[in-house]
Image (cartoon, each protein chain N blue to C red):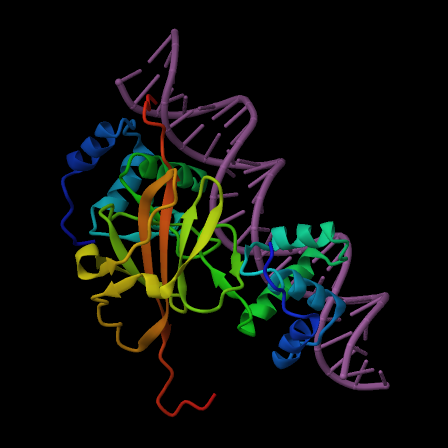
Length: 146
Length: 146
DNA sequence: GTGTTTGCAAAGTGTTTGCAATTTA
DNA sequence: TAAATTGCAAACACTTTGCAAACAC
């Protein structure tokens, strides 16, 4: 906490610029997503956060909205887990730490890591993105005996 | 047809060494998986390949077998796509090219790529794996006008 | 024989879709 | 008012599970 939120009108403008009508649901979801620092969130999580905040919105609309925002480049979808989609409010290229055991997912700025020796891209294709995930596991205690 | 298979006994021994009873289904699936070079495959794909080869095995058993093989380190599960699990017969650390449009998935040997500047691993955790995927898209024609 | 494995069908999870009602511009 | 958006419930795709029958040792 303690960071400055962008004013409401920015969220409204972001929607307008993306060509999305600023409906009550989209505005409310956008505020949850963008006015609180960078976030990694699933549809279910965003939906229950909306419920908690007394925002009436259906899960289907949350899914639709997340995809519309992704298409409009307001969000990035990250593949971390088969069976669940995560959306990242950080749309600048960067990498991740992920600990499956506790669901922890955190950003690593792209400039922190250098990737060298990328092989030639197959003919007829171009690079869409570089996904780099450091998968973590909880360290066992020293006197491990399992 | 027509490829050189490793002798049947190798597959049988791999199962035995993994502590898995060499049942008809497990042997047949292991032969499909391991006797034909490195493969990336989903449960559905392996199941239909089994059907094609007149191997009677249920989809549930294919799922169970893939997970048992993964637990036994005979396979590696790779996260490439939310909503579908891929299994890789290459269990040595390595990276991937992936083109979503055509489902193309290919290996990049670990020694080809150098990753430098890995940040400190969060306290209490250790690195389980490094997942690096170069996501590709089909290149648009030169006279692109979209 | 005894414990393991299988197959089926049912249940579960996360996600998408069809469509009438509502809202926006 | 016309077009876009929403919500619901049903449909979906993929995966897991419960349990009786079949199998391996």
